[in-house]
Length: 200
Figure 1 (tube, helix red, strand yellow):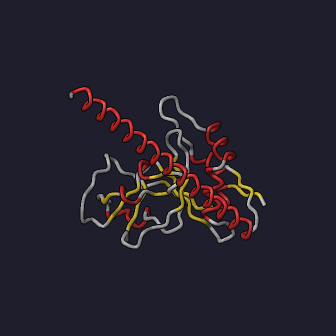
Figure 2 (figure 1 turned 90 degrees about the vertical axis):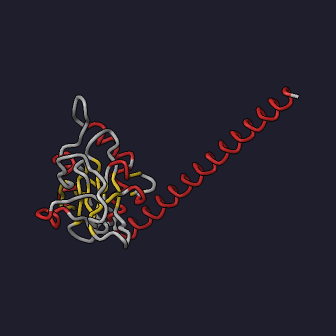
Figure 3 (figure 1 turned 120 degrees about the vertical axis):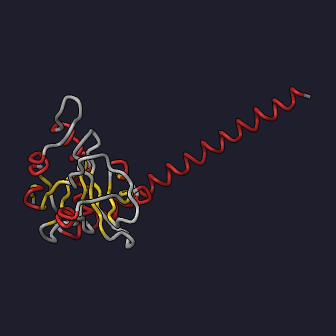
C-alpha cells in the first residue's frame, strides 16, 4: 500500500527554544540537537545535554520511545528512530526537528526511518528543499511525502538488512581509520629514526 506521512504519523515541531541551547545540569530535561544525530549511529547520546525547559510546555513537547526525529533545516535531511536510554526521563528535540509519532502499528518506525533516508527519500527532500540562505523542508512537504509500505514481515526483513549494511559500513570505516593511524605511526617513526641517524 501507499500512504502519505500525514496519513501515517502525528507530526509536531521540536521544542521552541528562543535562545541558544545551553547546558544546565540537574534539570532532568535532555535536549537532542542536530549535532547529536547521525544517519548510521542514530542519536549520539553521549553528546545530549541537560537544559532548561519551560514547565508550561513540557508535556506537549516531551518525546517518547520510537518517535522519529526528522531534520527539517539544512541540506542533511535525515531521520532517526529514538531508542531512549533508561537514565533519561524527559527528552526534547531542538526546533530544527519535526517529531513524527505513529498513528497505528501498521508501520515499523525503523522502516519509516529507512524509507526517509533511502535514495527515494533523499531525492524528494533535495528537490523540495527551499530557502536562499538556509535550506529547509516545509511541514506540508513532509506531510505529502508518500511511502510504499509492505506488510510487517517484509518491513522487518528490510530493517534487518539495513542494520546489517550499516554495521558492515561502520566496521569498514573503523578498519580504514585504524589503517590510517597505523600508517601515520609508521611514517612518524620513520622520520624520527632518520632524524636520530642524521644527528649522530
